[in-house]
Length: 316
Image 1 (cartoon, helix red, strand yellow):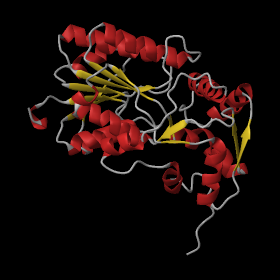
Image 2 (cartoon, rainbow, N blue to C red; image 1 turned 90 degrees about the vertical axis):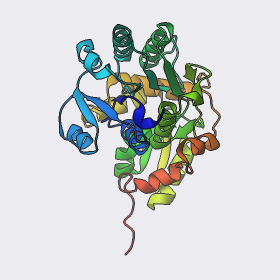
Image 3 (spheres, rainbow, N blue to C red; image 1 turned 135 degrees about the vertical axis):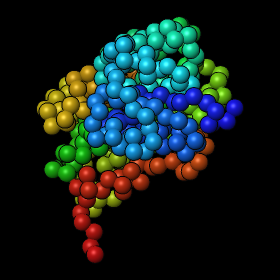
């Protein structure tokens, strides 16, 4: 069956602001000749941009099952990029329920985290585990990609403001060297799962590794070198970092929630004290295979966002 003969791919999270994997997945799908449908919570300017790119949009909410019935009808694949926020278990349960009602069997690809576990100290990780287990147990044709790396975009979201203002950023990762990946490279993994389902046919839940391991001191050094500024990393406790993130969240436009703060700081502490369940190895070759190009390094990421990190203006 050719791409054009297949049903549309439904995207949840097409206009996500953190990482933007949905946009990259759509780009890959359109390049492969696939028809794309996207559920949007609001018919705003971002939805209009999707329509202009050839994507059919439908207003809906993963927490409102009624809106998912027309969205899921007739699709051959589904991509779920739920934000780092509470409510994912209900969202995935609604998807499974509607698929069962429709009597269909679309291939569902879930954007997940390598730290997901039923007994995780993170509430978000527990919710993802419950929702994903539900999909598997109900017999949904699902591939859950628990990407085992932090996004470079986390540094931008959590620390670019203080780096611009003071040249210092702080968190509770300490000297640990966790794996990292760009959201674009992660999105290419999800796109491959949608376009070539046999790639991950061995198990419904897989743990793709990241691109590179970096400590936050190494991150500070790279930002310094690429921006021409003296940038320093400082260790603080989890409680202290929670306080800083909570104070800064009021300026995030709703992007940073209490649940996200608890999730991020908990896994940072577990990485620092070596109690994390996430795999710590990296595999650049696997990412290159998925994208067809060299993966993005953190240094390349900083070059793309020099202004956000307060770079010294380059001389003409």
